[in-house]
Length: 361
Image 1 (tube, rainbow, N blue to C red):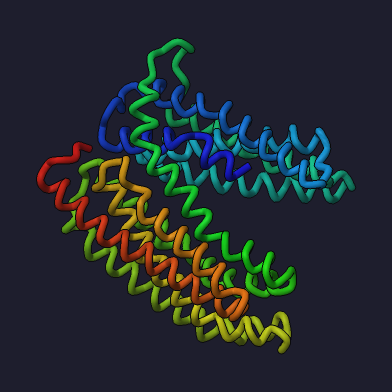
Image 2: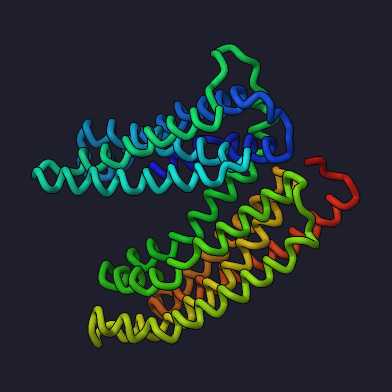
């Protein structure tokens, strides 16, 4: 469902957000809401197709699960669109409030179903979908994103052209972050995949911090509220603080893993510092990603993520068979380093073009 949401919006939602930040068509929120909402059908269709193709592998999902998956994709797509449009008008407080409500609603719904003995695959998917849909409606109405009437002229072509790079970048980013788990599971088996999942959980938990800060600063750059000189110091401080936090993870994590899972997770303890290093590099790539969203032409935003995904997949595939989850950890370092390097170079190019006035906001 999540993959269908990322690919199915064709980058239109992100393009709408960037245009709103730059003040392009900011007065007509209904057109942007209609553009984003029009992508929900594509997302639902892709989710249904994916569920059907997955069923052809021999796993009998059942019609109810397929229908629920389509509903989940549409609901997630609606919530993602509402959040992106909310970011476009700088409604961070409402976006955060609604997203917390969605998370709480999912927990309450799932717990309630489990309590009454009605929790199944289908009902669990529905319990995830409904809070997303309600959250999208609430946030859209609160921030004034009520879709214009059908037939209103929407610049889909230019939105899709601007958003294609972002869509490819989002899909590649997802692949870069998750592909190592799939490769480990396929090559080494379920136990190694579980151990690797335990190892990456601790460092990745803190990723929300640099992601959120770089996103806000990037939005301020795009909207013209601040300059690169103003955000340079905060971004450097974010990276330095994150390095300190990951140092704490590398120091405390091994003892925590041993206490929770026992002495058998020796290899997990060994790769925690490596994964903490990967997260530090990943934070650098997030910061450069924020700068790109603030400075670059929309059609060029996703390049670093695509490069990082290719490096991560290739290196992981090559090294896991020989070096196990240790190889996967170092492959994560290679992928994050490539994203940070390309992101830095690309941000520098974008800054030069933006300064010269060659790329309009």
